[in-house]
Amino acid sequence: MDLLVHKYKPKKLSDIIGSKNNLETLNSLIKSKSFPHLMFTGPPGTGKTTSAKLIAKILLNDSSAILELNASDDRGIDTVRTNIKDFCMRSIKNVPFKIIILDECDSMTVNAQQAMRRIMEVNSDTCKFILICNNSAKIFEPIQSRCAVLKFEKLFVRPRLQEIIQKENIRINDDAIEFIIDTSDGDMRQCLNILQLCVNYPNIITEDYLVKLIGVPSPKLLKDFLNTLNEDINEGIKKFEDIWKQKYDPEDLISSLFRIAKNEENYELIKIIGMTHLKIVKGSNSKLIFYGMFYDIINIERT
Image 1 (cartoon, rainbow, N blue to C red):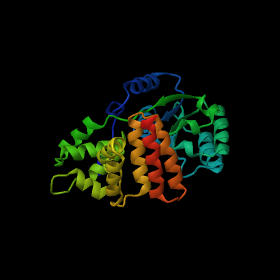
Image 2 (image 1 turned 135 degrees about the vertical axis):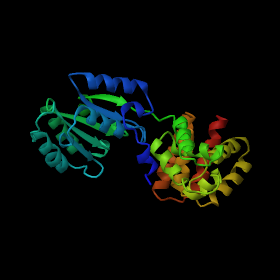
Image 3 (image 1 turned 180 degrees about the vertical axis):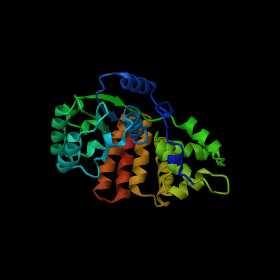
Image 4 (image 1 turned 45 degrees about the vertical axis):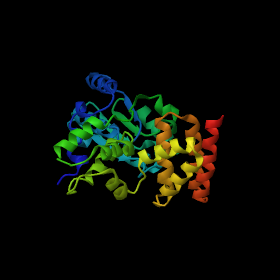
């Protein structure tokens, strides 16, 4: 049985859900005689890598003219000097140029990026780079300036998710669907990975089932906690104690709260939760840190 992420992987550019502007731009570039270096930036699971592979397949009907690398595996300068440089120097007949797809390039070291910039510069006519990253701020500015940059936004996953649920005959209630949408946070790959766990479940999938299975707090529960905390601190603390008893990983808990604040564009709350996350990562007493965060959150409402 195929995994859902493979079964429903886009086969052509028009299958990719997301920005129509990006799709139009990519189709225009494919038809253009002067194809540039590209940089795809945005959150995980938004179609960046799939788009890059489909473009390479459309432009070059020769897999030997395409090099795919994940920079998180080989992030140092040796990869640039060996794999990438050697590929650029290789002669391949009957193709207009070669393509290098470099995924997670924001994990590359500064020295590796500097070396790659020179290679991009020297081989721009014979080798086109498609750079993929989550955070373009980590990419050397001279590299960015050599690329056409396309930003991939979080996806509106609901229609595609419901379509797949129907095709797979998965019995699932509305609360569970909302849980998948909230937890995946616009990441279609994460959506399908969660849904994969439901494929052979004999009963109706509920939110409670998914919460226990995945081990992450319900976004709906956390939103209710934040609202209660602002209205009545004592009731809010009681709800937090109930959540804490479930023994969620503190980092999962703070990450879920951060997503809620980010989606609501509550910048003061984002700042407070971000600072709390740093303290938790450093290994401080997590529960005490959460209580300190609650104090700061309450003060937002009072100012």
